[in-house]
Length: 343
Image (cartoon, rainbow, N blue to C red; front, side, top):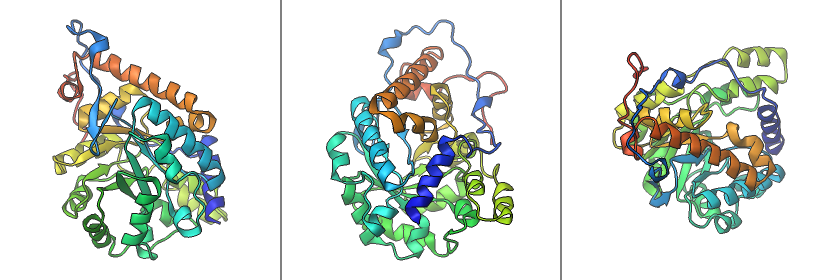
């Protein structure tokens, strides 16, 4: 049943039926144009460090879902593309692999295909109240040779999903215990409703070192669940929350202000390299994309590479036209008057 659900999720997102009306807020961030950048564009350095490895650009393949048979091909395409580009890869939920042994391409092959890039394992926070613990976390990490473990936070999705896990009591303490027990960093990630500064600080104090804000403005899992609801009442409940959440831009600013030493990943409705530049300017260390590259991921590694080469080219132009020779300079780039803080 879980595999069928994940296949339904994939079909809905690929069909463009998983979006609400929320805005990311990134469109309100307008850079001041620098007419005399005094740079050679080809020499702009987009590289950065992440999880102890050097990556070519501040871009992350964010977690995607799908039943095991389809996920296997998607994961192979993504791993090959990430290896070619030097970008990190966060896998979708490993719950099925851990519970039922249906790996979906989530095995040691993934590390063989992408030996030098950061890989991030993943399962849901709700599973920590249904029997998962340190042992399952270690298995998830070892399964793919991961550099970190994502614990994804999806209370809205679980609340409106017919089969949702609705007991979220005591999860912060269980996340803290995992952070102490695991030999790799723990990443906290929302799935499209955003993480506030206050929640991020609680996670940081619990030992979480990386926060992926995954704000509103991209895929709405309430809208997705409305599409697969079993009754009109379930659909109506879910649909009311299609625009719910903290916009991505605001979430990035809040989390950066609350956790100045954390690694912050800006995701949620990132459309292109200009959005990536905006997110970095607001305080993100990396920028994640998932639904925006899902179609390419179902096709081939070459399609994924082509997608990211476009995003990287756009990010490079944004750096050039703001006079930014590297990412630290981009974080200080001037904004047009009236643009900037969205909090």
